[in-house]
Length: 165
Image: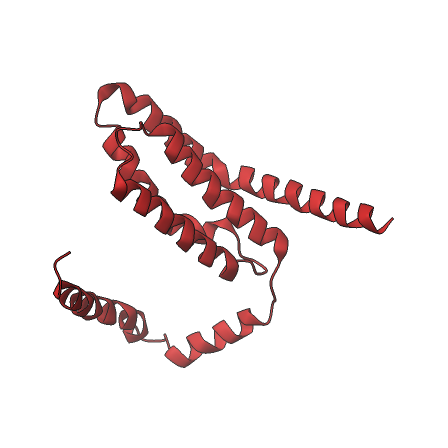
């Protein structure tokens, strides 16, 4: 990026993001203060480690699958930046989504970013099967992620109780 261009990009992003962030509150019956009230109610639930582990298992497994399904030739610097960004965002979302009635479905907006490297890798006809298998995996993963999270939480509880005995 050229020096001085970052300011123009930040201003452009702000001009686009501002109206998008305000748009839901322009609909009749939707209130900004009502939204803040719901957020306050949700913040009283507390942090649930089992859901956090399930969330982390979800995003980590997704990134691992994309990495396994892409060839080394596709894994350039932009690919690695994207994977780090998805893992970082996934970790942050996992913290906030570790509440009652929450879970890995809050990480679904990150999945299109994971499909971009696959689309690049699938441009060759021999990789179409890999992309198809990954899409099948995405469809079936949430129940698997919940089971993995439950197993990890069970093992953590077992280890904690075994240390007490």
